[in-house]
Length: 135
Image (cartoon, rainbow, N blue to C red; front, side, top):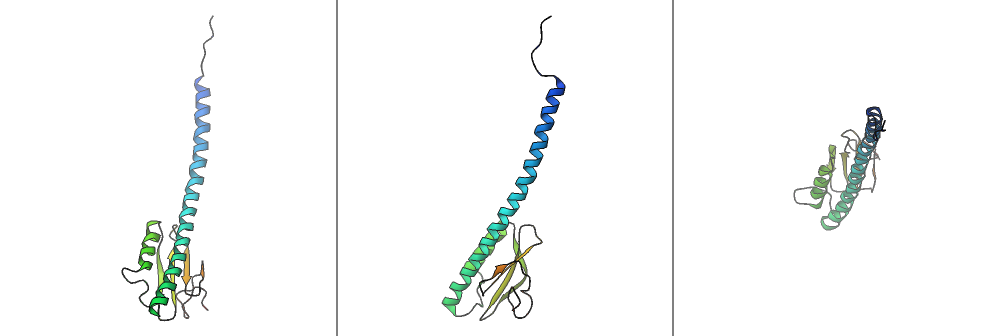
């Protein structure tokens, strides 16, 4: 009798199961890292808001109108939107201060930026005095 060469059906099923398990692990981790990457990019864009604020204040002597149509601030906010972030509930632009918060890509975590140079997870932007840290 001649021996046949090849794999049995059980060997093939085991290999396919192992590949499926490893693929699931890779997919779950890559989705997590993609979200973290978007959040990092959104946080980086909020730094651009601070730069735009400094430039606007230098040119106009006020933060009022800093994010009006056609400003650099609006361009940055559009970039944040493209990354899956969005404006939070609080957005204040007054003569000597500004405070604005953004939702990160998960839609629940707020990231705040203000004229003091602060950028972080605090959510005190809606309380007087209007700054991320509430002071």
